[in-house]
Image (tube, rainbow, N blue to C red):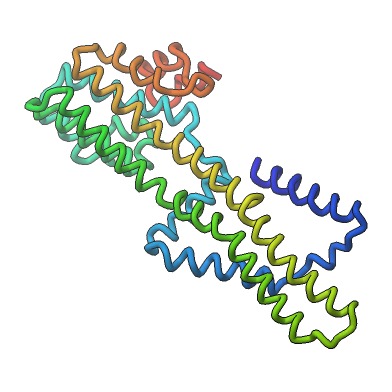
Length: 292
């Protein structure tokens, strides 16, 4: 929503200022200049990136417009799943734990946390490291090093769409110059026309430069910033899992290990201790209702 509000303000101020100076908006309506710039930018984007990244860029833009960041329920579900698994690790047999992590879709622990179960990558991350804990041969610092390596890989993959769009946005001013030069070439072919005609053609060519700069700095760049914010916040769920499980491996009881994970959440998004405690007693919704 903030993207739309910001874009409306930006466009309104640009057009309003132009009209206040005595400009005519119809002079800015140059669909072929926009086609040249937008088409060249999109074509270069497709050439430069694998199709998986292209598709992920579309998904990332959708997430940015929706501001699809983890809410309190997401954090509580993650903490609730981790608490249940750590508690069972202390009290139940290996076979009983493996039943949960080998088939999380059928696990009562994961079913009580639908936001976790819906996130297949996060579910696999949790199950993989709980499985390593069950094996019992790896030391906590070895697991932590492995987690850090995987977390770097996950974040790198998540940021591929962001990096690709930044590159495309940086190219738009130069592509705008290409469109402007093409417009000037068209104007020069009509050099014998009246000054009024030539003025209109040169003005249309300059719109290409303006559009390239506008698309880069007023549209793509802010959108990329929002994508980066959203993807980083989504990645925070993995950090919560890491800190919680490492604390548990280092000897903390489940309740204390959860606090290690909770503290990695930004203060203005962090569930309260009471909400987490309520979640431990009533997985799947109790904590959030109390926090609200």
